[in-house]
Each structure stands twice: as structure tokens, then as C-alpha cells.
Length: 167
Image (cartoon, rainbow, N blue to C red; front, side, top):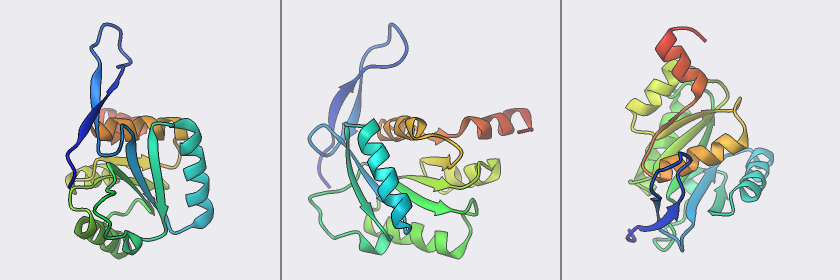
């Protein structure tokens, strides 16, 4: 694995010092999107490219398509699982294969629904984010940056469910 280097990014809060987002590729955050639906995959890549010029994007249909190219490794992986059921065999197979190909991957799963139990399962599995389709691409860009900087992302509605016990 290549050594990570930092890129200064201003914090949103006034008076905060600049922080560095570790990246592996020429100052850009390397993002790999894995989605088996071509329309969704291509559309999301275009939206991310427009909203995040600091991302280096690649997209694949399946985890098995990840090349053994050691020269390019993503900082963050977006894995579209569609379902919120992380215990589903297809999801478990994808996560296992992804861990085998990129053991240190920072993974954000993209799901159709924002369920608190699924988000907790994702964090327990070591994933760095659970992103429901109900949220917009601007927040996805922010989530990728947060995860690349070492954080975790959970949707605001899920946090509300967990803290208040209601949707």
C-alpha cells in the first residue's frame, strides 16, 4: 500500500484550524463506486464528478471486477447494496470479497432505506458509513470526505431514531 499524504481542507466551523484528508493519489480522494446497475452507477459517477472535483472516481459493476493493480487503491469505497439487510447472503459475499481485495478499504454502503438497526449493523461490521438513498448527492460528497478524513457517517434520520427512539 502506498503511503497516505495530506491535503489541506478548511473546516466548516469558524476559528478551526485546517485539517488534512489523507489521500493516496495526487491530492485527490480516490473513490471506487461498486454498483451492478449501469444506469445508477453512471449517473452517480457523473453527479459526484460535478459536485466533487477533489475526487478521483472509478466505477465497477462487481467487487470481482476490482483489478489487482496495486498502483491504484481507493481511499473510500461506495458499495451499493440496495437492501438495508446487511446479513443478506449477497451483501455478505460482496463485503467478504471486498475485504479480500482491499483489506483496508473504508466502506460506505448505499442502501434504499434509512433503518437504525441496519446502520448500527454497518458500524458493528467495521463499515465507515451507511448512506440511504433518501439523501442527496451533496451529503454523499460530504460523507465521503468525512470518511476519508477518518470519520464515520450515519444519516441524520438514523441518529434521530437512535437518540429519540422514533423516526
